[in-house]
Amino acid sequence: MSKGGGGDTRQITQTTAAPEYAQPFLEFGLSEAKNLYGNQPSYYPKQTTVGFSPESEMALQATRQKAITGSPFIGAVQNAVMQNLTGTNPLLNAAFQPAIQQVQAQASKAGRYGSGYQQGALASALAPIAYQAQQDAIGMAPAAREFGFADLNTLAGVGGAREAQSQAELQADIDRFNFEQNQPMTSLANYMGTVKGGTVGGTSTQPVFRNTAGNVLSGALGGAQLGGMIPALGGAGGGGLGALLGLLA
Image (cartoon, rainbow, N blue to C red; front, top):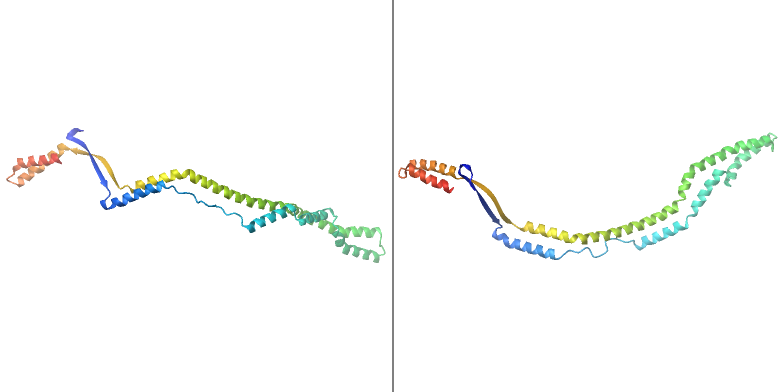
């Protein structure tokens, strides 16, 4: 294809290849890549999760049974808190005895034993004790309520441990399934990457612009100068030789 000013464009193709000493190694690598692609890798054939040990299994079973049976302490604690809250705890009588004895002794010394005065003094002495027991029970009530769920929480912990184990086994099955589904594509990608990486050399083509008129003129001028330097050649002969060289450039 020609351009203005006498220029034209040529396509130059360059081909490169691996050195001869590397050819056997490259052929070996490509052959091995093909063999590896033909032999698909397999997933780990054995179990990929660790089950409960015998000791852990026994502990889980025993804990589960105790949680189902229930702890006698839970009901006892809740009953004691309820009795203190309602003032029906029989142990309150023992707590009242020091105050009762003190009031009776004072009333007897004053000659007012059994009187209304004694009854009023006795109520005043016992009220703070009963009130404090009630306030303590109110403060303990939330904890006593939560304590009632202790067996259920223990049972839930056993269930959570078994669920975690089941989840791990399920995930192992999913991982195995995904591996088998993706393995053909993964092997092909690895094979293609290996083959591409093992291929050395190639071909490249690029356009090169050639200014024929400029080369001829430049060669003619240079040849004329060369002819002037060589008397036997002469200016005209040197110019013609330079033009010829410029045309071949």
